[in-house]
Image 1 (cartoon, rainbow, N blue to C red):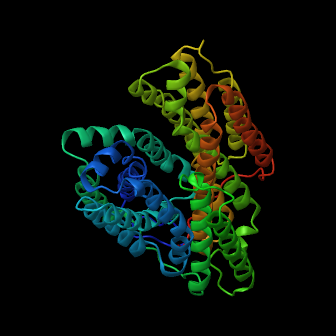
Image 2: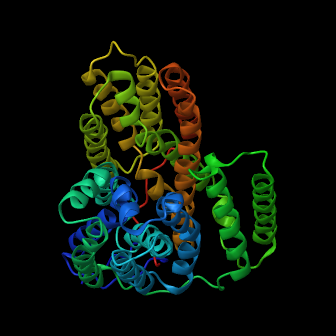
Length: 469
């Protein structure tokens, strides 16, 4: 058994010599499951509505999953710090597979929405804890190389989800977009049970702030609904919209007050006061709002402007994935060798800004390869720091706050996706071609700000210590 303890705060984990490889394979499968389920339903919705009805509520098939996943992230992060991550992670993974199986037998839209929300509750734990358990076994310096394939699987699965969903719906039926998770999930559970480390060492003190968690869930749920896909359908001056804003603001304010005063807050103040965690979260927000939120609209944009066919427009996103693949692999190796990371977010943000400024010139005179080139460069920029931001946040806090730091970065990124998608959708609803230059230049400005924030990161190396949680 290798000793991974590299400091007085570190611990020894029962990980076999090939444990890291098994853990990586396990996380690849887990990431495939959770990422693809965010988008796989898109092309199956018409068939689902034809089968179970409930057209008016079909938007909740998306929103229910995303909302539940986003709202539960900090809860799982804190529970992992307090109670240990292994059992919690395995429980969430099993729950995700069970919920997927139940989604496939839903007979009404209401049942499907509820089960998708249950799937999202488990998926939030899987997403956060899968990244946090890596901190239990892999040093920060090696974590980038370890997580690079995981990041690529996440990006690829999100892009290919609608294509896979369409293929399954046309061949074996829409229910198999959920049932396919059963055999894949069984493999993931078996691999995770074998490879997720057993940490030995003191746990964080305190207990979960239940009242604070309720306030947090209410505030985040209100924000997601008001700014997300469903929120765009509201008349913002209607009584319901105004009441939603008031309730969301009240819950958010009460949560902040409780977090500052409570002895064991849901999100420890030490995490929020850490400069690196804050900057990493802001960079994650930029990626979510300016890239992942944009991905869902790229096929529509190129169909409208370049008159491309639907299948070809979707395939154009592979250029983005290829760019991520090139830079993620290269930068992960460089980080593992040198331990340096400060230049990567700076270079990545600058590259993204240039790519988006280039795409601002998109019009009907362009060839598809020109749009693909811009997306490739955008992918190169994102890949420089997409997975790195989590490692930077984890390395900046003590061992008993790793879960909270991980969940904070992921939460802010997902909120960025939600807010960015709502904003981009609202802009494009008024007309695509005339709005593109301003839209892309605004997104480029987001990364210019990100580059400025990157300069505030300390110029030091990632540590080689292990963690206790």
